Length: 192
Ligand SMILES: Cc1cc2nc3c(=O)[nH]c(=O)nc-3n(C[C@H](O)[C@H](O)[C@H](O)COP(=O)(O)O)c2cc1C
Image (cartoon, rainbow, N blue to C red; front, side, top):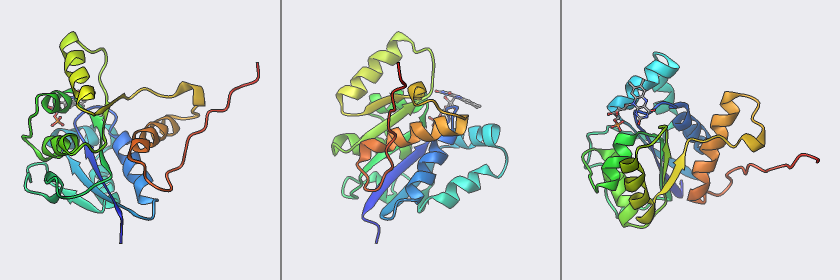
């Protein structure tokens, strides 16, 4: 039986490949059960960025898929124990709703649960630049325990393709959940 439950949310920001890589990585880990929520806006971005039929690839990689309106799902309850939640990519809309304490859909509700239960919540934010009020709200979220991770590549690892770069960001996001068997990205300094 899977001993680590991970909630993965894909919201309507650009970079939906981030969410797919998170799911792919988790599917290779022996004891991980993934609970996926894809927002309605994310479904549009998935078609836009990855083409028709790509949504099925996401759902096929998850252990359980929850509709965004199903706020009574197990992951909406604090008594459903998880290793943490990654929102990748995270839209500004969802980030601002979380900072305001809202739980209008399952992504927001599950996010609030992770904050109140003091479990890892990672927001892989995809927006640039950010306005002052966004930064204020993000600082509040960080204060409440969320990891605010801009979708910013680790150039110093010399990614050889966009896919490598995105996979590395997904690995980094998942690293906050302390999942056994998760591969580590090592930094190899160049000779000077
Ligand atoms: C093709 C496309 C790309 C988008 N890219 C972004 C983005 O990079 N960042 C962002 O915050 N919102 C982006 N949006 C806008 C969000 O989808 C919109 O704010 C939506 O309400 C987010 O809802 P959700 O957080 O429930 O997924 C994009 C929308 C579309 C259609």
